Structures are given as C-alpha cells and as structure tokens.
Image (cartoon, rainbow, N blue to C red; front, side, top):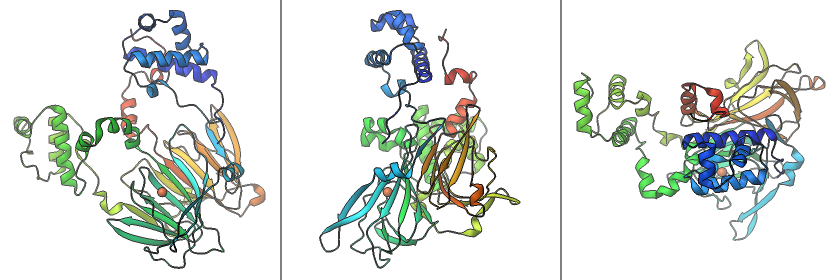
Length: 461
Ligand SMILES: [Fe+2]
C-alpha cells in the first residue's frame, strides 16, 4: 500500500474549522474551551485557525475528546490520499499486493483457491475492491462439488464483474446454486450470503473484479455494537411484505413520538382522516399512508418500503447486448454502457461496463456522479481518462489491469488514443454509495448557509 502523504496546509485549516464547528455545537467559545481544558487561548486559536503544529493538534484532540462527550472520529478529517481528486493503482502495484489463499480440497488436502490483489481505493470511501483470480479448477457446474469451498458470507454488500470462465456459487435458504459466468457477466450479493468462485478451464485466465462496501449500516455499526443485539434488534422491521414493514414502521414512529395506536386514532379521527391504525394488520392506500404520516408529522416515504427483498438475495446478470445503450445519445456512441447487476434495495449503488469507443481527446464533462467512482480497465486497449478538479483538467491513462478511484462530483470523461481508433477500451465501473445520501442531500438543501457547513468560519454567537 502506498503511504498516505503528509498533511497539507489546506487540511490543517479544514481540521481547525471542524473543531470550531464542534465548539459551536457544544456552545463553547475558544476562551471558555481554553479554560476548561487548561490550554493557553492563543494555542487553541492556532489550532482552530490551522496554524498549529500537527502534534499540537493531535494533543488538543486527545484533550478535547477526553473532556467533552465527542467522538474522536467526528473531530478528525478523513486524510486525503488522492491527488487532484483521484487515486490510481497501476497493475505493477496491484501485482505487488498479491496474496494467495489456500482452501481444503475434496481429497482432504489443501491447494491454492484464490489469488487476491488490491486495486484502487481511498480513505474517503470504505469500499474494498479486489481483483481475485480463481485458482481452483472444476470440471462441472455442480453447486455441491466438494472441491467448491463456500465462505460464510460477509457484512459488506458485494458486486462482482466476471472475466473468463468463472463459476459463481451461492447459497440461499440452505439451497446451493451454481451459475456459469463469462466475461461481461455480473452479480450483486447480499450481506452474509455464503458464496464461492471457481474456474472451469485451467488453460484460460478466470478472475473477478469484486467490490465490497458498507452502506449506512456500516456507518451505524458503532452504535449498534454498543446497544447490543437485544436492543438493536428492535430496529428491525418485517420485510416479508410491504404491509408488515409499514406496520412495523408505524410502531417505530409511535414509540419515538411517545404515542399509542389508540392516541394516534384519536388524532386521525379529529383530523377527519379515513385511516385508523387500531388494526395492526391493516393494509393502507397511498392516501391513508399520507394521512397517518401527517398525523405523526413525518413524510409518507418514512412509512413505505419497496417490495420484499427476499427474492433478491443474489442477483445474477449475464451479458445482454440488447441492454447496452449508446451514450451520450443514440446518434453519438462515444460510449456504449452496459447496465450490470444492482438492487433496488440500494439505490445509491450503480454498476456498469463502459465501452470507450471515441478517440476524441477534447475534455467534456461526460459523467458527474454523486457516488464514489471505481474503475478497472480489463481490456488490452489503453483508456485515457480526463477529469476536472479545482477548475483545471487533469489526465491519466489506464492500461490493462490499472484501476482508478474518482471522488464524488468530479466531472470526468474517457477516450482511446488516436492510434487505437477502431479498438474499444472496456471499463468496469462501480458507483459506490457516498455518506452524502438522499437523506443528507435533502437536509443540506434546507440549510441557510452552505459554505459554513463546509468550513465553519464563525463563532456561534
Ligand atoms: Fe465475497
């Protein structure tokens, strides 16, 4: 792994602003905080203004979090390991990270199963992208082949892109399945769903590009672990049907509002609403959900879920040229975009294969996403990437096996070299959910002074 670079002056200033924001939240001034922590006021001013030495800042954060009920993580910025908004990992660095893992064989021995290699990632997003070669070769598609070793599933969601003759195995409700995949195929795997991958052909390279990521549940993990299983379990809703989920969500909001179903019914009646919640198995129309939400002073969407997800524990998608579309328009196919396996349960995740056809090297902001972007070039053709950062355009080249991380809201485009005209560069592209999800998006959009969110510059009074 490349070492994270030194702290920049910009980061020191941003760090100071974050501390000032926390002081404001605590209704402390620099003066009152200095007294409480036993620091010189001038020293605290230097910290807040980004002028202090790095070890002074560290010592201040130690003292601060030791005194006020503030988590260390909410006071420290993610270190920027990107250069001009991106972070690349080239094939050589990826190969240098290779780890071969053995697993048992049917005859009681052990043999190599996977070779893992890192690809591009950044501290700004906790997705984990791996290149994984299947070293175990099978000669059938039997999901119960004893040479196939399933894992126990994992906490992270997973999307996978397939290259070569890979068998994909998974287990749902005690039943095992095998799908024969080829280049261009993809899947989505729900957390804790056991799975495995093997090769069908020793003479051909078989590998996957697997991207695992935590979503909001990962960000909430600290609280969940502290509350423990018995209390955390109370958050769960019955996802076996839309009605059951809505009823559980009504109970959740009633609890928060310190209301009972009887009290809510009185409110609904007084408001002239048709909905009643005394029957905890009732189904509601959209209008009735809106009535109940209004009586609870919440949004109708807070009581609604999409379809039961049980049928979508694993989504497998084979290559389908009919689904590919020309981008940016049917008459301008600078790109062909192939939608890959995603789930409606995670609207923040996107997954595409992007075929780059154009040799036009002029920069255009063809793509700008609210997600973190992960890219991997699996083709023989070099892919040139250009992006805009701080008003300037930067460029780099992704050769076969190179990968790139691009920060959210960074306009970017791709093209091939003039000398490669007629060839196609093929990218795997995953849009990894940002912590800035739709809830945050709406909340921020209601705020009065957005620039103070990004860099607090004032005392609270
Ligand atoms: Fe996995």
